[in-house]
Structures are given as structure tokens and as C-alpha cells.
Amino acid sequence: MTNVDVHQHLWTPSLVAALRSRREPPFMDGWTLFLDGEPPYEVAPAAHDIARRAELAAADGLGRALVSLSSPLGVEWLPEEQARPLLDAYHEGVAALPEPFGAWAAACVRDVDAAATAEDLDRGGFAGLQLPADALADAAGYARCAPLLGLLEDRDLPLFVHPGPAGKAGAEGPGWWPAMVPYVRQMHAAWFAFRAFGRPRHPRLRVCFALLAGLAPLHGERFAARGDAGLAGTDGRVFVETSSYGPIAVDSVVRALGVDAVVQGSDRPYAEPPLHPGFGLGGAAAYAFRIANPRRLLTGED
Image (tube, rainbow, N blue to C red; front, side):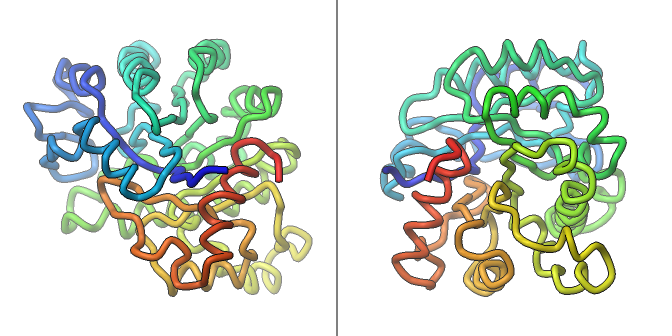
């Protein structure tokens, strides 16, 4: 019984070196990150200091903090020959992280290779697989990624859906635009695409959507009225995590999905965990978000 944060980012030296070796996005020049669709971003080295991050996790009372590849980098969408060195660097780095860190594996979605992903999962210690939301936004995406999702079902491992690249429009607005518009839009689409195309293909798959699925669950009433009422109910194998949101949004999603669907995710270092682990909803909610629900997500066990 341990407190879990299912969504953090920690760039290891191997991943940083791999990004610095490139000359086109995604790449790093020193500590400046260059992406397609976003303005240059100054990475704070201290935010990715492994010892410091372990101390922060301990201060938060975490027994496990799951690290994921930042899908807005666009690594998963690169051709396999470009994606593989970055994926290898990511997996190598996070597999060697000390306690309390665990990690989500990552995979190329442009050239899907389930055998390669199986080898990555076999490195040990991975909680499941993260895929970018824009790869799972329609029927074609679920058809393309079906070998990866079938692999997760076969191994009884969960899927973590995270926003993907912001796209060209993200570079034209203020710095906060990608996080507030493209990322949220992707998660909204991914939530309903899973209902329409993902769940029928993968009835046993457990899945967690980042950032409360872009608040898509709050559209349940409209979905029931205008969509398919049979798909509008709750799904005991579907979870949402809380990164960047606070008591108002979390309380609303609990009202829509129930307390059993919410797990804690912080998105550290880009956001901080809430001051109150239950988002002001009480100790029972804190226990559900940090212990009971992550256990069901990660293991399928109550």
C-alpha cells in the first residue's frame, strides 16, 4: 500500500545526450529545447536532477513516481530509424532510475513494431505503455496501434494516454497556448475515440488519460443526449489523472465518473502536486486517488 504519482517527467543524461546529438526537431542546444509547433523552451537543469527529484518525491510521501517520455517532443512520430535512438536512450535512462521512480515505456507510432515494444517492456520495471493522444484520436489510429494495445492486453499492462505534439499552430501563440489548446483538444478527442473505437477492439485494456482527459468526462450529459447513450456510462477500467488541475475540476470529474476513476498525477516538473492530496474532498478521496485507484490501474487488483 503506497502513495503513487502516475505522471512525472525526468530527463536522464542519456536522453539529453540523444536530443543534443540531433540537428532538427526535436533537439536540444545546450539546455534550449526546439520542437515543431512550440517556441524554444529553456529547460531548467535542476528540474531534472535525479537526486533532487528523489528528495521531492520523498517529501511528497510517494512510494512510487512514474516517469514518462514527454510526448509533445514528437519522438513517437519520428520514422523508426530516427525514433529508435531516442527511445533507447529514454528506456535506458529511466530503467536505471533509483527508488521511488518507475516508468512508462514508449513506442514509435509512425512505424509500429510490437516486437520492439515487447523487448522494451522486457527490460523490466515498466508500469505499462504511454502513447500520444493524437495517435489514438480516430478509428485509423486504433487500427494502426492495435498491435501495441493487444500486447498490453496480453501482458495485463495499462495504457497511459498523454498529449502529443502541439502542431504548427502552437508556435504562433503565447507560450501557454500549446498546454491550454492543442493538448486539451487532443485529450478530449482521445477520450471519445476510446469509447467509440478503442474499447470495442480492446475490451480488457486498462487505460489512464492525462489531465483529466481534457475535461471530456464533463460532457457526459451532452454525449448521452446527442451521441450514444450506451457509451456514456462509467467504465471500471478507465481512469483519469489530475495533472495541472485543482479542486474545482477534480470535484466536477468525480461527480461525473465517481471517485474510483481518478488517480493522482502531477506532471512534475511542469506542475506541482496539490497542497492537499485529496483536493479538499477529504481523506477517503486522498486514499482513493493516491493508493487504491493507482493500484487498480497498474495491477487490476482492488
